[in-house]
Length: 126
Image (cartoon, rainbow, N blue to C red):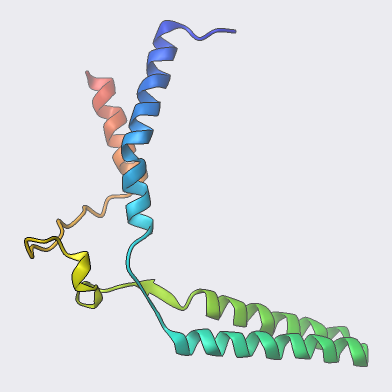
């Protein structure tokens, strides 16, 4: 069933806005990050210890020991994978600042859904 003209226009407008704001979404989720290597090392050690406990649990045939080892391995993996955080403004490299030496413009903290909702309301009022 083909779309009506109004539906087609609305779909085209939504696609344009999606492409227009796609760069905003990507820049808010990426950027300079710092890694806490101590947490990564600790997480890897916990992961290895957890896997060793799982093997011990299988050898001694006690399911509770295996489950505990699995939990330890998952905790170690989570610790290692969450060891990075966004860099603070002072931690960024000098190459990330514009040539003029000015700091980048601060972005508003509103969520994507709030901005989309506001834009939708503006369009409906027009």
